[in-house]
Image (tube, rainbow, N blue to C red; front, side, top):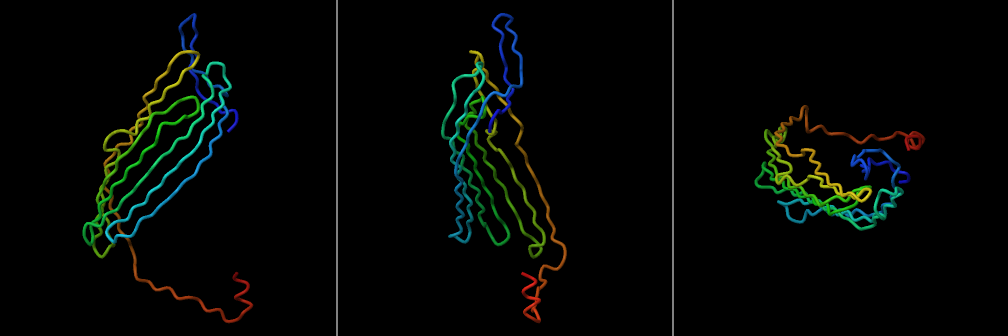
Length: 193
């Protein structure tokens, strides 16, 4: 991305006043890879994992900002579903993001732990589930930067903690058989492709 605008708090050494200003302050290049793995080798466990690794090169264009920032960062996510009994499933997930640069800021590491239960009832027409997200309250983004020689620290917390109860009901006939259509002639078959 070129000419990315960011809000920069520019301090005035004489007046000691800090002014937040939007400036086209940096160019950024990021490249990476995502790796997914689905584990289903045990009949009572399904696990979906994702690893993202990326390289960032941030070229600051403002004299107020420190030198350019380059580095490798990663994030990891794993969601597990465990079959407790025929109609009861336990769910647990964890997510971790390593420290990384976000424009003019360095972001601390963050992680999230989620857990829940899901029941399938009435011949699997009804699903009842409960879920708790961000059990440890660790998704908070802690940011730091140095602008014009002044260290800045931000503790942003956009509350992602929640407790959810969900009820789902599937309407209609779940056992409808669909028949494969048989084309009468070759011309009609060719037109359908």
